[in-house]
Image 1: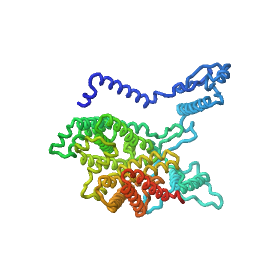
Image 2 (image 1 turned 90 degrees about the vertical axis):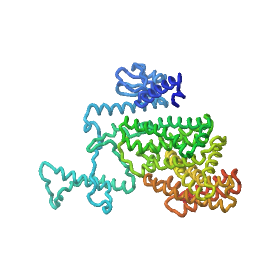
Image 3 (image 1 turned 30 degrees about the horizontal axis):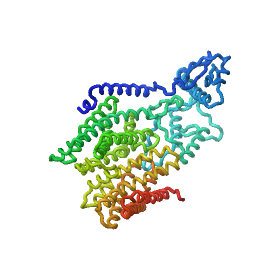
Image 4 (image 1 turned 120 degrees about the vertical axis):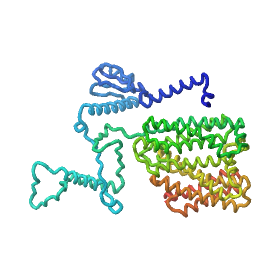
Length: 592
């Protein structure tokens, strides 16, 4: 009914036309049929030149006698004959020559693959074979090196295929080879020694032969790297309909708020929690139905898809619930809905693009979906890292939303930072400030964790020095705000009267934030390899020193705010972040 009300009459025709155009363009791009650089280079060709089938090249027939002058006059970028390629010294001509050489090289490889057997046309082939695990107890046996595995495989191969054409003649003074022992080979021994040296220096990269079966031969020059773009786009196809459905939830919620229909519900014998969940349930049901339909069409694992995308659905609705509660005009709602879509899309899609390259990709549930369609097993820790923070944010949003669900808060006009502080104030138990501070400190952790993981993921694409500084600067500020915000609210509303009470609440907030942070750290390090970034942000392996740092920095922020008032809060956060940042830099050895 909401769909028909918003897109009735002539509007439905426009929507259908736009949807058809979007689907057509998406299909063309996905099939790589639309090239943005079409006819970008002008290629002059002789009558005996090879046929070019690349949309980047605009082909012009030029007689050989006129080719030099035409090329010199810059009417063409390069000139191709049956045996040679001619170009000028300027940048455009050289770029065209580089594109032409790359194209001709790929075409030559394709022709070789079509006309010759793989064992005759290519100098390099990789044959995939899977070795059995050792029969001994893995815990007690010493780990096998790559050189040991290769040596054992060579011995087994020699034992299975004994030399033919007669027995081996033993020279004077020589010893017979033991049964099944491979004939020593100087080249193989040199390779094994080099492998041992590389492995000891940890220079051997991890090789994953995806989609390769037992005994399959891979030719690297014919093999495309396993870029997950297609799988990421398929996974994102789940998210787009959920965004569309969540916008109807937000607009419907805001419409009822403006029409004061929610006031009537507040007078009914039901709780605010029941109202919020009741508003969400139909839209969550539609979203789950979309997930089921897409999974059936793509022939995915239905139960696994539901397990992956159900937390994503709850996370998206938690964000849009916050938008609906904070604002009371469609203009504000539209703006912040677009901001929410941008942020959520970046968090979900960007890390998933690094599947198999960086373990930080597992902060996004779309990574799990990519692995599902690749047929890769997902560990419990990987699943928890991707989904637990989203579930906790949903709990935070519904809990706070239920406490602020009153007419005064819903219909008030205030800036965003003031509304957030008011939401914390309404949600607090005024009789047990320490307990409320501890609970909010724990509930803020998944928000901080998701923001920090997003920052670290983006930082890995920057130069190392800049990445470290950027990630530390953002992460310590976010942490200090999260730890001190609840205490600042008690100061603002004069719930604490003395500086000693402020100090106690600051210590409680820092301590519980530290405990929750270490729990998430334990879970994340089961998936993410420890690095300078995670060491700095999560304060390493020690316990009491980072605890004291958290307590000291948070206490400094809160006491400065107590002394200067809310106007001094930004300065207080800056001081606390500076102290925290200096500790993190010393932890990773910057000052050594």
